[in-house]
Length: 254
Image (cartoon, rainbow, N blue to C red):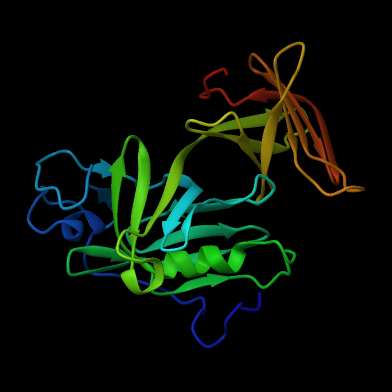
């Protein structure tokens, strides 16, 4: 993979000595292991035991508030961040994938390096904007179930925020052993469909039975379609057609 910006976004082994939970707010939480990530329920909280662990969680970009106003990504573009551990997060920026280094300093959270692939996602894509927003993050907290990250004033004004909604996975296994994951988005009727490392946002559509989701695409392209009824599901899209799939044994029915 060719990095998007070779001078500053390179894939490297990234290790930090401090856990995110211990440094987001100095002296406010009990000791955690070096692989733990946790964020407070509000900015600058000093409350004990209220931090939310986010290790292993995935969050989809919902909106951003900057000096230019408030807005979010269009429905046909997908942006998320997945906190793998206290050192690194996976990132999807529209059609590009990559990683972000997590750094803790002066009680704040930042992503000083974001490395993504270099596909051309289209002239409407917000992939570059999303990467720039992540690079401007200075802290994080949970509010009303959303992950909110504060932004550097120089980039976003004095009250800059980027907001994320929690994603919850439901894995499926098909008769041919093919596997995919349907990620529910908190507070949204949409979901994210992931197969073989590729993720797409699907919009819920009207269906007579069960649930039906379809991707928003340009004219002439093949949409991704996902149907679920109880624990059974079907899925189709460019290069695949899965007709007999069921939730993995540990998954909960829709």
